[in-house]
Length: 218
Image (cartoon, rainbow, N blue to C red; front, side, top):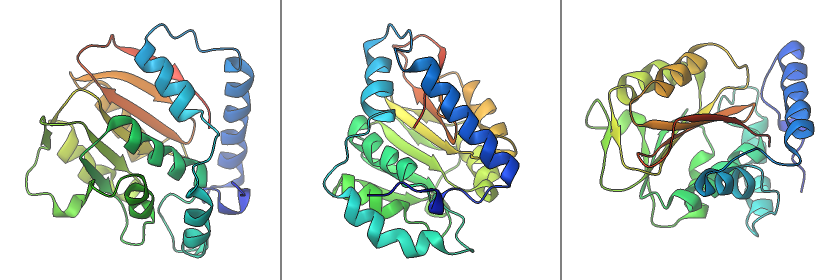
């Protein structure tokens, strides 16, 4: 299976080289460990974020979505590794709902549903309330597109989330509205862990953890 550069984010040459340099630097720095003492965070980084073992369905998911992800007009997540990470996060969180701030053409739903046939996939435009309150069970939230970051900020900044909830912010350019949202969500009183993965930022909401930042690589 290819995780190829043919489906990399639509970046300028400068942004693409910068992102690859960050990935290489993270690999060289953290290949012998992350200095993580929390078992929860250690498992998240080593067995979810940086895990390379493919699930049986990854090849068919990649093949079935490749034409859509190759379109010039496609603005969702094109990188297979990022989509596979979200697949793993569905399993890791045990989330009952996935709230997606995604373009209509996104293939994210296919990866989420492949991970769990029972998860409710909710498009952000269908949300009934603002701010978002999800206290009964962990929720997985994904901000996939820069243009939707403002809407996400309105729903998430004043929201409240169950322990174990995770927010994934797709930010391959590492600046702009999604980066601003990341900074704002890190100040959320329930946010405890921020993992900078290069192309994405992951915010974990969990009252039982100390507030810490980490770096990892895909």
